[in-house]
Image (cartoon, rainbow, N blue to C red; front, side, top):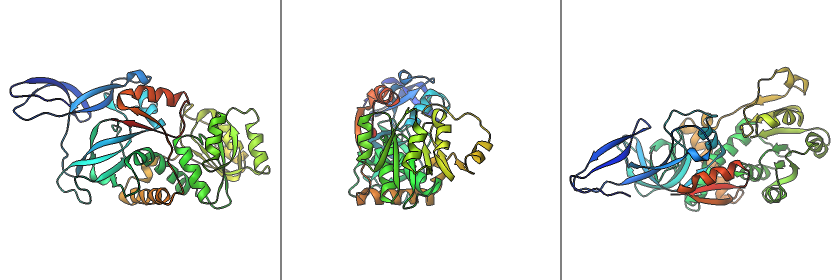
Length: 357
């Protein structure tokens, strides 16, 4: 927090249409509060992220100001930072957070000052001590769901919801293959699928992660990089293959994932951890038993209020019932965001990651 007194002129970073420029601020007797935000001015590794100070904003019509108490970190944040998903520079990062409403703009209904809220929303910019957000994109947290849990589960939990209910609707008795089963999305999705009566085969990279995945709904484990990966999955399914594959890895695993599917199975490719899938012929789907392929994006499923509320209600129901527990295994100060990204990309993390302003 920064304070300026009468006639003091201070240089700061002013946000204008999501661009930061250095300006001079003339202030009177009142105190000027400064917020912290993570900004990038170029694409690259974790080192390109900078923690800067900006004058706090007041919400406009239809907006609320949220003081963040916890911020979620997701693999998609690394895509934005690296340029795989390009952003206009300079840019913020982060898509989900939770906190307390400290100001409300005109025309806002359903949210009041003091409400505990969370959101998963574009554009990136959640890596900040506070943020102005459209009021219709935040959800009020019920008793029993703390802010850290909400920050760690909004984007990841909503992702698990659209995977299991919208991309391929899991049925009791289905066997499905889930990559990164010990990650933030994976731990939520495996528990959720298990609660629906599905048998989950989880893919992990270490024995420690295998143990974690088994404790969170995975009936079987296949190790990433196993030279007999497809044969192992076929063995676990009586040679039939799985009903659906949820693949967040992308390029390196795409073909082997297709080879694990049963006839008429569904390939859900929803991430690019190893890079985007290369162009391929649709005949590859026909040759493997008339497969279905989808490349879904979360924000298409929560673009309107009906979708957002459906995701909210489903997620809050499994969290409050205990069917799904969120594992926050790593917390970092906002100033240590580069280390958080480095650990995430090098697979040194499991479960969810939270930043603390």
